[in-house]
Length: 412
Ligand SMILES: C[S@@+](CC[C@H](N)C(=O)[O-])C[C@H]1O[C@@H](n2cnc3c(N)ncnc32)[C@H](O)[C@@H]1O
Image (cartoon, rainbow, N blue to C red; front, side, top):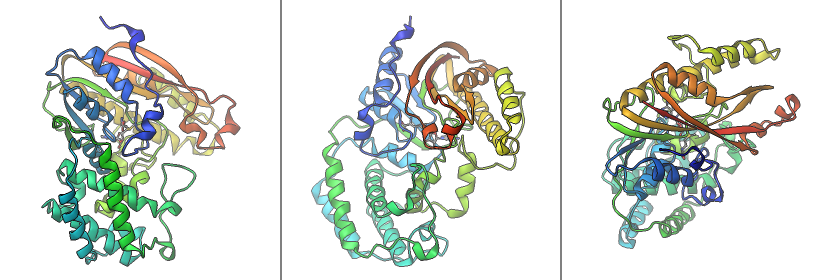
């Protein structure tokens, strides 16, 4: 029998800032550890995280020698999650070979619609593409990095490369840590010291490898997929643990524009990716209204529509509906893939629209129950620092920004 009070707080501690690859929305490793430790007794269980981000869940599963599947719609998250599965250092001999190759192949012709060109001037874009292609050739990979099944070593090197390139892009970052500006043509980033970048890249690889300890090969399967349609077999998963996207209008796609450009993600597909990402602030043209909003969602919708603020009707109400619809379709899909009596544990956080408090746990409970998920328990923790502080104007609407983070447990 599970004891409710034994869920530890999912709030991230300093542990997350020491993580090898930073991802804005990561959740606590300790929370995943303690949840799996207490709730997964079958060593053969298959664990799923349908919103795997930089792979906290899949990494903890590796530690526990549990089989896991990590899904994310964002190609950058897939690369970071794979990189986190590296279980043995890359030898110095291999690194010498790679960097020799990169220094001899520092320019390639690039497509005129290459996404890199939106951020970097032409010569810099050619150089960065040459590096990305050079790494791909080294790993004998032909396809575009963003939708290929990369090896863990390859993903690791790309993740370090992201970090190094981003050091040159500080001026594109603003006060919102999840937003990257697209510069005007004359302000595109120019990197003249290419040798210096390669040498920094190498030293960062060596540094990152120091925190890789040799362990058993990971059995995590990390995929690029949509939680609304995972492609997984019915009744194939024993346990789900995840932190879903929140209702905070964070644009996970914009926050990793530079990384997507490095992966040669097609610029014409960016809007499509943003639209398919749950919680997107973009307006999706066709959202099917395939179900009736349950009572809490409906009362919130009415409250939003009745709010005097200009964007309440026509923008925020649509945004809210898109989000709820994404969770509706995903919870249906997760119900399909989980085995009978399988369990799902989700960490969600409240937010505000102006002065309207949105209790995300209630939304999840109502929506998940529509498909047959049985609520087993909810445990709430109060959170002080949160995304609502990013918008300083929000303080004009309310004095109290306190919100809760909830752990919700369901069973099929
Ligand atoms: C809160 S973050 C998860 C962070 C993760 N737990 C970690 O520790 O890194 C939510 C993730 O959901 C992903 N996501 C959003 N919509 C999705 C969808 N439709 N299918 C799959 N993943 C999606 C986002 O790309 C983001 O990485």
